[in-house]
Amino acid sequence: MTRYKLDYFSTPNPQATVRKRSRRWAATFVGGIVFLAFALLFFGGLDTAFRYRGQHQSLQQQHDALRLRYDSLYAAKLQTDKQLNMIRKQLELLQKSTP
Image 1 (cartoon, rainbow, N blue to C red):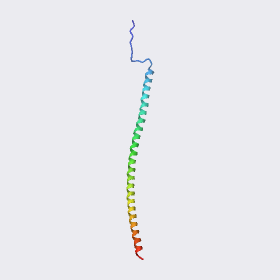
Image 2 (cartoon, rainbow, N blue to C red):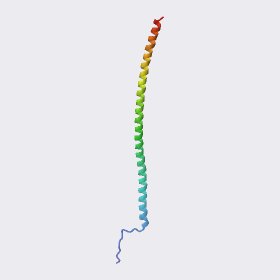
Image 3 (cartoon, one colour):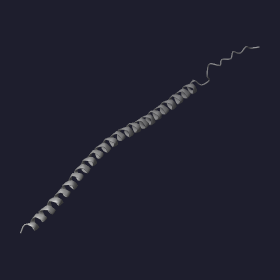
Image 4 (cartoon, rainbow, N blue to C red):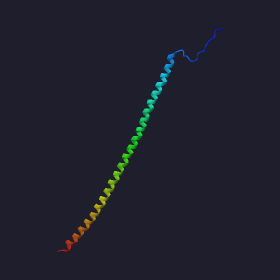
């Protein structure tokens, strides 16, 4: 009776093993690129959001400062209008009283 030696480590087709490895490597490589692209998009979006948030806050502060300046100028204008009306009334009274 002939003794057979079973060899579980060798493959009948050595190219099949290489192909499987290359497919796995290619899938991992493509998956890594896709993951990297999505990570760049995500963190780029976060960066843009924070940058726009900062710009919005600075624009809001500038707007508030301009609004305050406008309000103070408007209040000063109203005050001068009141004083001008009082002076006009006094001038009319003086013109009426002097013949």
